[in-house]
Length: 107
Image (cartoon, rainbow, N blue to C red; front, side, top):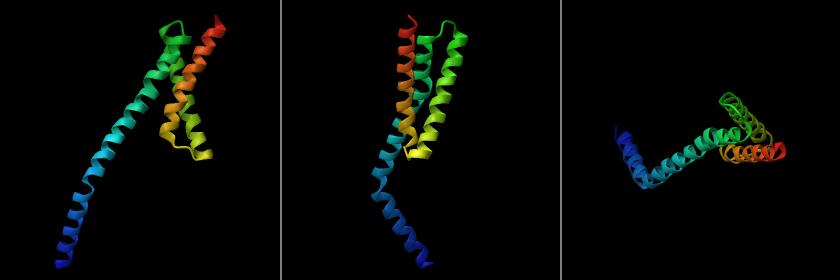
């Protein structure tokens, strides 16, 4: 019994010592979620808006953009050891810029 209570006391000391790190980790995870939501929902819709004429085209093009960026990032993550989350955040603006260049080439 004394070993168990001694282990509990040590675990309590560890948790007090690292509380600040746990809070900072939670804040950083929240910021990462905001970036991923922006990269997967808002940027592909903006890219589709530049290229499409009707809402159905916009939905289809935005879905294709998301699928291409996620599949491409998963492939690059497995091949070149790239972190998946930041690569998704960086790949969607590239697709947006490609859509802008397609619009200029189309005009």
